Image (tube, rainbow, N blue to C red; front, side, top):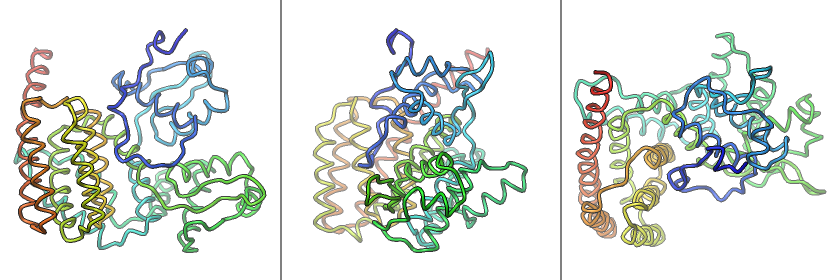
Length: 398
């Protein structure tokens, strides 16, 4: 039976990574991503059994080892896990909030993001304007602020143990590896040693070591190189996996679009202000190329093209924390935002063009005003979407 006949579909470009890294992905990771896409498409029904190991091996035409690698990643996400027995199979779970906070803090630690930059991002979020004054706490901002607080990943692990949730041995070893890399100040390209050496150093089996190394590979913290000159090689920590993990939580939790708007608008206005001060010939060229693609984009591709443009601004702002959370908002927006109205595209594209002109002229105020205008348009659009959803919910409950 084919994948389509079994009802497993992926939302295509809507789940494409914004600013995806060039890290070569393994087949197990691709399978895990497709399963998460299906969980989202089905409405993320906690406790639903999606199928057995044999079902998935047949569905994706993969080996047992590849499927089990995918399961390990789903468990790391907190999205699903295997249940044994007569009624067993791959079961949908609620992704734990701690995994999101731990992932973000791991990225900040390994990327050596200065505490002042984390505090700067937190201040921007706390000052974010509210779309609906008096509304309850913003869920997106609350999650981001938790990831930006002063606790370390070691503090988080200790909190879990105090609460009685003992981590798997592989999780403990993964944390130890991260701490050892930080403490040693290891640079990109440094070799931590081969598998045998690391097994002896940490006193674990090859299976446990490989399971511990996998999340570090996903964060692009390390690359495992085989051969005579091989070993576990340090790389530069990449935010892509953290962005994916966080957007998974947001999708499950169904955070209102207005909450996303409040967080994203504040972050992006702050990012463009900083970008103007740092813009050079290379960054302006990258932005103009993204603008050209955006101007040629149809309504069906506009969100992805705009996301590329806005990610460049955030990435070149000089604050990796701002860039990370902008990336999360853009990735989540690809999943949940509807296609924009064709009639509004000319003005939206013109606003992006005016922003590039302002940045090139070094006009900070004009660049920020263009960004505000874009989000002011999005605010009206989101309010219409949420009012329509409120009406549907009222009719359904009535």
